[in-house]
Image 1 (cartoon, helix red, strand yellow):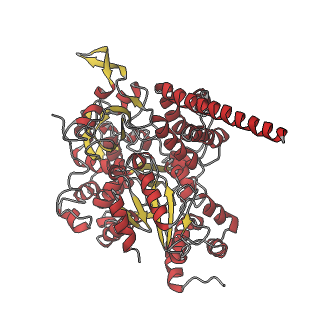
Image 2: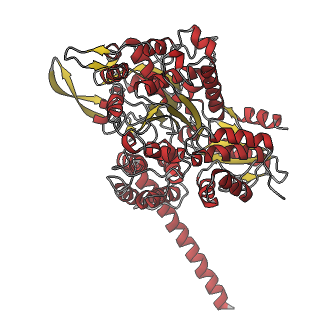
Length: 479
Length: 161
């Protein structure tokens, strides 16, 4: 029977576990950091020496850790891109701007176990020679910001932060920076602009890759909360051991946020790829199935920008069986919940947020809701996204308010196809188009039927009002 | 009315500015601090922030107009923010928003933030508050409420004195 595997959330929900430093220390907190700070350079057979920092970075590379924020990019690779020769300071920013609809995993870590994040951050900063780091937390989490500030103060008081940390000669300061309600700040270059005190307009890449030209035009690492927590466990157990968790190329654990029409919505930490979407929805250890008497209609598997999966959809997955590549047909419910399988199914695991919709949902209304979100959150920098997201939202608004047209489905598809694909500076263009493309393609009949029904109603009313007008004219003429 | 920042708040703000190698970076944190104290960001507050950080007022004003959390006019003493986005909508947030509006004599169909005549309550829809597993969720000022049923909404409002 599939079950949770608690690595990051090992202590968070235990009775009596509190977010203060004493409790964290009692549970073995900051031991990994002490171990890392005491590491010695390693003499290699070729006479070269490998610094503790390089050794730590190697472990992260070996672990196969992929970013938990949404893109699933290799963390080790991201760190390897950092320009270490420029002589400029290197910055690290923890992206705690959790705002992809459906996602609420970072909130748990920040509220219940903030020191785990801080230890992961100190380790990551140490491994990358970072002296100044920030936690960019979304503005709507004022309690989280307070908790983090308190935790940072506790760490400073114990010399786990500040000058000459634990006598190692290493200096580091971490500050909390609050956002103010803009989704686009989750995009790393937008986040950097925002941290510089500007509007969060994402930067064009190239040349503004954060690893080279990030915060204040210095090399910068931006990692998600959960990713940074994982670094602590990688250093603790070693990269190779961490890579045994999960499945090949999809290593470690992920905290899945499950919401919508299941009996037990919530967050569940699983080994990546060891549990299927169907199990997450239906297993009593996880979602516990749909509400009574309801059938599954659709699942958004990775935050609201991920392409929707329709109940009963089948996919061809390439898998290795006894060393041979074979193609297997699987139902959407049998997709293993990992990065690669969902990519093969044409969608993504994104920020690991699953939104479940049962047959009571009006699919057009659901898309209208998502599109309104994107229209609200487009930063407005690039025309296709600024205009397109609004046009889509307007068309969906009329479809859900009795003003629809039969042709709206095609109209939506046409707009959605003209936003992404390198026409915009950042991936928001994709994020706002994918739901529209997938919803309309997979549930086209419902969109067309809704538009047709509205047209028919208008025609009828039109006839009625026309005849009423004609009658009025006759009456007027008769007088 | 002249705009003046109390000495204690200014000390706090000066401390915040030291967190950054470039003063301008402190803009959002300074605006948060001012809004927490004054309730909104007036033109005088924008000018004060700009002067404090060595910027032009437009550099600060463009933030106030961009970031949804900053208020450009005074709002209610209790600001009720109802999450509008998909998971909460599936969990009944539209009905909850309407319930708040009806109860407080506001128009549920009106766009943007609305404040009651006595200035006690403001109600608005906001986008995803990142607690989708306990939908529908709301915030009142800095406090966060999960799984808000009608009964719970009644109880919460009755506690706002």
